[in-house]
Image (tube, rainbow over all chains, first blue to last red; front, side, top):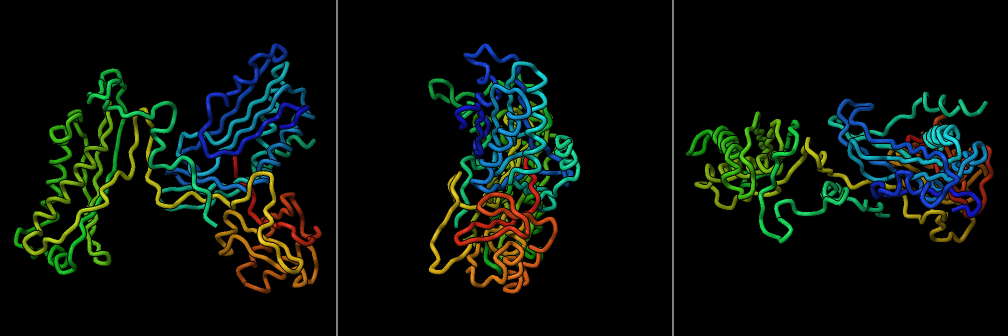
Length: 156
Length: 284
């Protein structure tokens, strides 16, 4: 945790806890006017129409560092009060939460945009890889050009 | 290195989610109790269970040829399984009686493993799951196979009766997983693993995710004096010369990190660096 910036990241096998929904960010504080929380879930269709689950692999060490860097980058771009990034690894079934990003700010626009930005950068920079399990077998998910186009929006 | 085991194994993940880790057929005092499903909404539910009966090769051959004294073994076991699924509530004390919309059994005669694999699928639209029906169908089909073959073989063994998957209902879907989850490496978060020190200057090279499967290994050590050029391109060249499987490192989409920081082909490599190669990321 950065002592000056309230940014916390977690890479974990466990499902999200109830405290991960962003409600913790506003507790005991009166300077926060907006909390935006994004949750990404496992779909039962992606590259196959019948995805039965997926296994997420990561690069321990680099993953946490990258997520913290993305959080700090968001902190510089927007006026934020708190940032939380929780990403799960290991086996997950359709409907399970994969990633949860929460941002707190004084006004809503900062929190909305910071969440959007963090997700775009997370999807193109953080070392996670998905292997999908489907009726036809297991395969590694291919990167998407649209994800890179989304991340490029923030470069201008 | 063993992969980090997932803390939540799929076999009991249903019960670990939320605060539902309790036995639904026991009341607050630990007494058996039939669950009142009257308030639950009706959903489409399906369950598949499997099992097998292992026998002597000669018995299996007779079964496959339809030459056993009691006749068509598989057809009889199929009817037995369907009948059993419909009568599960009479056998399992706290099961509800269900109006199943579909019961199907498949039999696979496996000469390699000297066994018959049995799979049962049960389906309905209702308020309670059908996994007990599928498991009962498999169990009774296996027992029927035993009964049909016991005149020639008493050593047969029924085993591996298990739920393969279920869908529908509040507790979510379940899918039995065969493979252990793969999670790279054993390094502690925030630390670059140095591992055993080399006697001479060297780098530790890691291959992650899809790339690990394509090159066929997760980690290797390269002595710096084997490199013509002490940069990422030089490392790729040395590895490719060592083994053709490393040619994939030359693909443009392959990414590289030195000491967990992204690096390009011209980045310098020094003693005890950790160099990782991996495909484009797909998280989130």
